[in-house]
Length: 306
Image 1: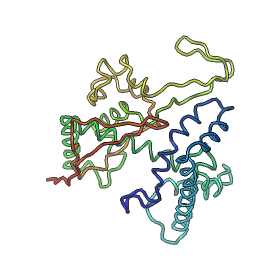
Image 2 (image 1 turned 120 degrees about the vertical axis):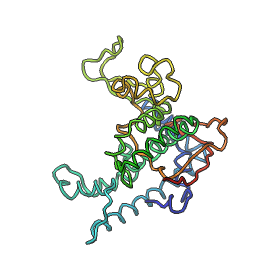
Image 3 (image 1 turned 45 degrees about the horizontal axis):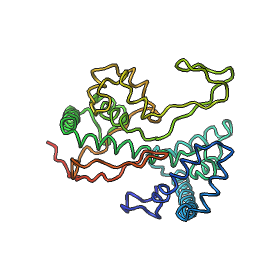
Image 4 (image 1 turned 90 degrees about the vertical axis):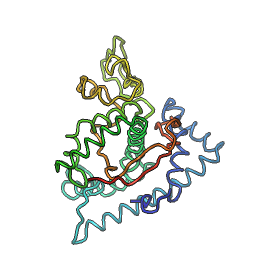
């Protein structure tokens, strides 16, 4: 949509801008609400990088609005394309039952620009979290050649059996047990979101794990804690071992996964072979709002299939 893939670079420095703001947003999003405005104001005053990043956010909003308008024009032409992306789904809701559910074109526009409505981040939230999850799955596969080979063999067999179409459909991908296991395991070991996913205690209070919490309190748990629970995932919970999802109680493990959202991700790298440039070198992570990885250097080669 923004041209990152076509150009192969960070157009407009948008990704750098978001990365620069994450530390400030992380603190601002976790301090008590009565300190939020004071914190952000002081941060803008003392941090030149944050001031510059906030200025660039406006450009991101302009680019997002242009993308929404372009997609709207594409869908109003006589020849519609076959893409059923997120924007199309929102436009369809607006056209079919927008008045009934009070979902206007202005609501669609608000989804593309986080500063306008911070509680609606459809266009932004999925970018970092999905990229982090894919990074984790591929990184751990490259560090575990046996698992990589097993997954490749499973995909090759499915192709030979004509069980996969191109592009691979979700309904087809979920029928590959080892692929699902690898995705679950990668997301388990390195959850995309670094904070808790808080919930407000309802009226009457709640007792959780033997502790009573009064109504109105915020409670939550970090995915990086619960997804390493040895009672659920076994004594080797800190190890990348996709087989646990096939051999163990996958239903219980799936219920314990709170990385983000629901569902698995299909593999888009069927025709490529990837390997770490230096298998002995660990990745680096910057854990703020998101647990973002860096220093993952890999070789990508075209893989012949016969």
